[in-house]
Image 1: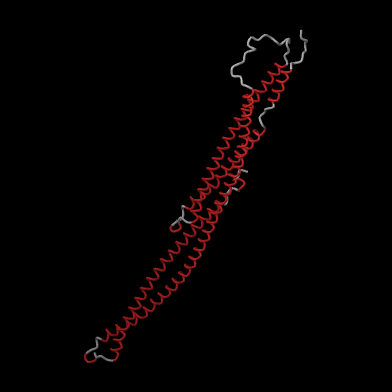
Image 2: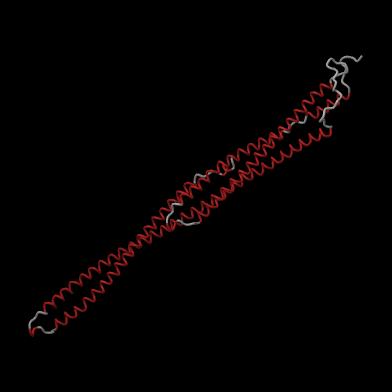
Length: 352
């Protein structure tokens, strides 16, 4: 009769130690760490995508504002080219961030699946340890020992020790590979955020430089127009004085002509032999020939001066319109610069 309280046989102790060693197969902490890191990266991506909306709206607003330019100022200038490049950069950066966010979410899903697989494997080993430990404690005649009709039969689907160890190693290998992929993705993610922030800042600065250059050109053009307009005003004033002088000269010539014609007409009524061609007749004849010619020249000069004055007034109106257009365009460009001044910082673009 075996004694009660007998120690388990040696093979049972070996089983306990083997299962106890296998039970130490727990999910590596790197899974949780990588999951937390990728969750933070996802948050940074979302913040960066949200922040990208501000420069995109500013760019669209600038495009809209500049559509109100008029006449010659409504051109495809360097500012328009810079804004178009900025729009393309924003579109490419948003696509990069969205693609990186999708990759991060996919990696998080894989890590969650690996974590679930490892936890399930660990749970199976824990349960197997408890069952094998209970079986190892049984002695030949314990109270719990009973006849089991199927105790000697192997269940279908049982694995061999090599298969069992290979399965555990495969799980660990997949886990390490996904953790490594997560670390690589983190580096690529940080670089993508940095590249996006640099691209947005670089294209934004290029557009700002184009705006400032355009504003300076408009201010210089406006100053030149104002200077020319002032010279034109002075020329108009001088021409008006000249016309007034010509009109006065013409008036001064017309009165002597009227007097000469009246004298000649009056002397034509002299009677008989007194109606002779005398010296006054020759003087009146000279005046009647010279004064109309002089008056005609004055009238021609007056017409030319009046035509010139009219042309100067048209030029003055054109200059005034050009100055108003420059002022209008300047106000639009300055408004665009004000809109662009409310842009995000580089840290915000990096999701920080």
